[in-house]
Amino acid sequence: MLIFPAIDIIGGKVVRLERGDYSVAKKYSVSPLEAALSFSEQGATHLHVVDLDGARSGNADNAEIIEKITLNCNMFVEVGGGIRTINQIQKYVDCGVGRVILGTVAVTDPKLLESAINKFGDIIAVGVDANNCKVAINGWENVTEINSLEFCRRLKNSGVNNVIYTDIGRDGMMNGTNLEVYDVLCQTYYPKITASGGISELRELKILKDKGIYGAILGKALYENKVNLRAAIELCEVSNVG
Image 1 (cartoon, rainbow, N blue to C red):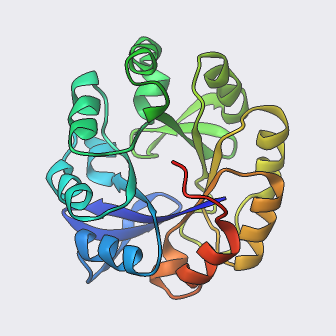
Image 2: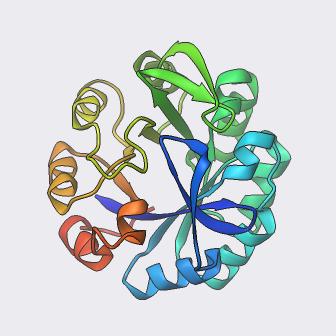
Image 3: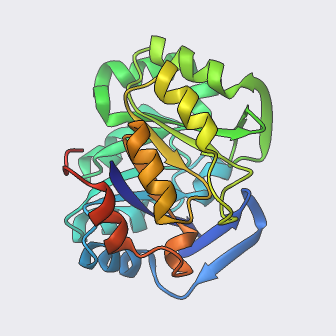
């Protein structure tokens, strides 16, 4: 199982939210590039970056910062947040991004998702953000009536091979992740599921790995020194295949 340390960006700063609430964003003094370089020094080979401004606005507001990260860090970088056009996907690919995560647009514009898959293949992943098993969009601020597990099934049938599934209610709380939902996803839907939201102990990572989860995203637990990144990588990673 791959470990993806996370960098969430608002206004050019590294932040962590609680349950997707922008009003309680905690800012950290480290810059996005400094955070990426630090993760690399600790042994990380993969990185998860989200433009939270873009997720709300529908624009790639922090694209320059993300490009700087990809050009200066020898890591596999996956990027999400505000990516709503084929042109923006192409721009990220051109600057070295290894995987582009579509979120809101995967819900609101399935034809664009289909076009992206046809053009970019497995470079495309979909971020499924779930609030009480309902899909949330537009930076988690709007909750739809779409069942998140049913949506994952539809994505698989559409040719999506990578899903990043986030339980919003657990995200940033460091009270543990939703292990039960990953049981369902692994057994029913996807070979490549990345777990996100609330992971706070090495024990959870071991459980997720044993379930067959493809990747795990670590955010606040790293910034608050609750999980040691190097130890997490040593415990979980058996290969560095993107």
